[in-house]
Image 1 (spheres, rainbow, N blue to C red):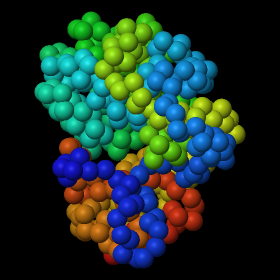
Image 2 (cartoon, rainbow, N blue to C red; image 1 turned 90 degrees about the vertical axis):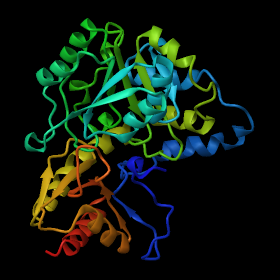
Image 3 (cartoon, rainbow, N blue to C red; image 1 turned 45 degrees about the vertical axis):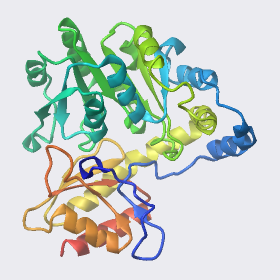
Image 4 (cartoon, one colour; image 1 turned 180 degrees about the vertical axis):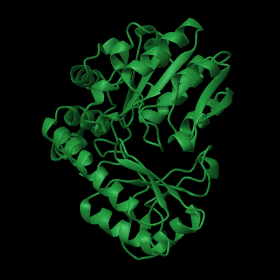
Length: 358
């Protein structure tokens, strides 16, 4: 793969330390697979001799019940990332506005459909925050704009009120707004931020969610999009009818019904993200961007080794970090780390301190 679009989570490479990787490069729920999801997967294995339900009826109903959405406003994806590709190949906007830094698959999906891309650089001096007034000034001439909420890798959040204003103003100039809420389940107060309730009334809005990160099933690939029913029909017509496998469908249903796991996960992340951020901030030469969910963006002082050098040193110790040098808008001084268990977090912080020479 082009290094421009490399991701974290490469746990399949040989570990120089000769043991299992300690992976801080992929932002997966540190509580791991819930027992209810594990049980659903094991129970479903004998059924994989059959094709999955192409309509995903049971899973769509579980999503509708959990998020309060009508089924006709839901389209299932083989992970959230697939839905960006489906959108761009179905709709084929001429030009997209892309705030950066942001998740690289936005750009890769647009390029795969021949869409022209204009960057909207966010400023490190303002913690990479999006200013709606400024973004609206840049919007004319673009058929589409994509925003992560929270943004990956910065973790910045826009409120529901800010997002609603953006979508309403964008509608006046026929601009589609895609909101990627893949990490929003980690927020205890996600209802303050989600745009899902507005897809019925704002037909220029597409909200994409991942179920793999919060429920720790990235190997199964599962996500969905919420949009006006007319857009959902368009997306359905342009995707593989069996894009979500049977194990993923059953795992998704079980996950969405596991209230105890959901509450435990939100409480764990709310506590541990702040503990980890404080520990990292104590390391000389490291600036911490305050986390909103289960990952933290760091900036290394120019007096320290580069992000690539630090990642390689940590790799030799069996620890994976996300080098952010290939994010447009960032350079070789940025790292992203996931929130893991307290023990893992302490080990990573100690090793990072040693690798940067403190």
